[in-house]
Length: 365
Image (cartoon, helix red, strand yellow):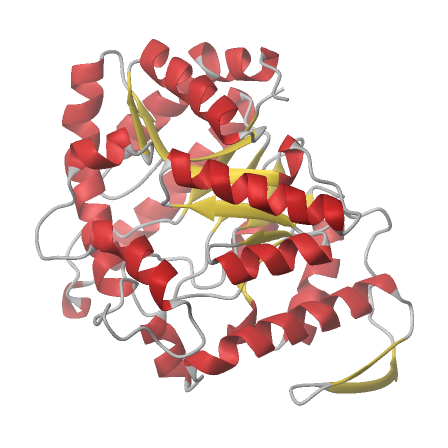
């Protein structure tokens, strides 16, 4: 079975000038996005993941665990999570406690997603050196695991120390291992060694198949689960009645979204990658999104990063790509940029009626 998931970064679709922020419009944005997430459950999505970003109109979700808690009371079946909580940005003790609470607020529907983070500007504003992000990330995951796995835990590191401490409430038993947003080869190998599931984004289908194969081989060697269910790929997905209508709506919306993405996340100097990050990988990763003009639509379609069109086009493209990737999980970024309430809800309804049932009937080896 192909498992369909929904993703929402929650872009601000209007002026990027902070002095022009529109509180009334933002309230309306929150309201209809909640409506769309409730519809996602009705449409048959397995779950919804939110995202964490700070100080940017690229996202109006700086505290996404609040969205999980709020949506838990408006849904009954769908799994809920964040892809990803950025561990170095937080006290990991606080994250572990929030996950324990959300376990109960969602009645066991919580999906934990964690990441190291790559947003240079966000870390700079927090005063966190980029070369500290990996040790903070790995130590934070260790503490979160210890707090969740043992009723009384002890932890000692340069970043946190606890002696015979208990968490209240304790994590629900039987919780699945977290998803890790993994981009660089070093992080993907580390996840395989630790037995974490991985989610990847913004990379060509051909490249991601290599990534997934490498991850699964390393996970098997380390004695961990390594099937199609342990990997997930993020894709921008939008559906309208025809291919032409879908592109006419989605292209300007995606250009707005990637304009925000470039401003918030793409590193200013790709020739001098921050210490602690792989120069070769991140230069290649960010290159398609660098520059001053709009992204090259056709290139990103050909790479498999955009999947936009009629229900039949999107259905066939998703099924082919999931088989090419060897992944049974597809994470659909379904509302982005300047898409309106009506355009988003219509796309979700078409996905639920004409795409998701076919995905769930498909098997992936």
